[in-house]
Image (cartoon, rainbow, N blue to C red; front, side, top):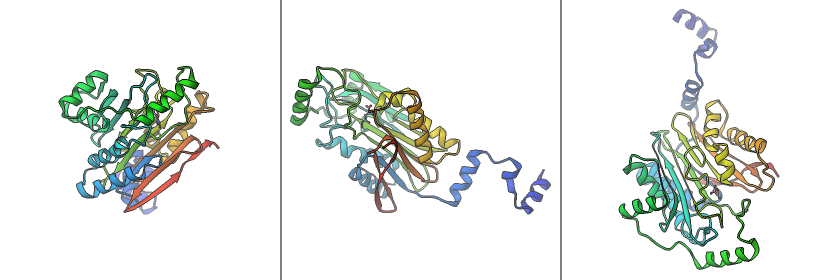
Length: 322
Ligand code: SD4
């Protein structure tokens, strides 16, 4: 066998010609040759969040700290109406938040239907680190948050109250499934040791039904990290992302050899092939083990922000519908 390998090497065919190199081996080889790390990528124009994550990574060398600190930026911002404090309420006036986080070891934590705490990403991290569970929901998540020392607060701003009042006048209290109000933060990254992690946080669809939970806190739907392959996260209409297990799909497509952008595109095409998407938005971003990144959306208008070697870049993602 070795003789045969030496012979093929001399011919310049190497182990690929022997059929010995699996997809993962090939990826590992490629990583040695070409890499772009560290790197942090976020959905939408979350430049402050991405920059904060980048700075935290430089200082603390912890990608998980970076993801958490970055995502806290829109969670704390009352003017960001899709995440945390100031997030749009459900149709009965309650702001209920969803978030999840995954590390490079495959650990995961998540909170859903959480009311009264502005940093669900940090509570999700505590679920991951301090409990044997992956997901805590509603009252249980709130009790856990309280026990972990998080402080309760009212997340409904005056501006949100006004928006709800206006919505009620026009909507007849019917949930708006295609609302074009998106800012959910999904953040994924790779550190200088080429380890991956990610997080996702949202207040969900504006004026949703009480108890509605979207894709963002669902491992595999709103976020997925596989440290051998890559990471992906989603934004947009969570119902479509959940029904196609979108972020897991993107990572699996990268496992099969697609680039991050190609994988995001294929996942979007899968959604398009199965559902009526005429007025819905879904966007994915992904990063692979080489630190290559990309994004793709159903509709035009989706952006993502990337930090690499002290540079921040905002990209307009390509889309199926223009
Ligand atoms: C959800 N995917 O709850 C979230 C919404 C979103 O930007 O991404 N908004 O369905």
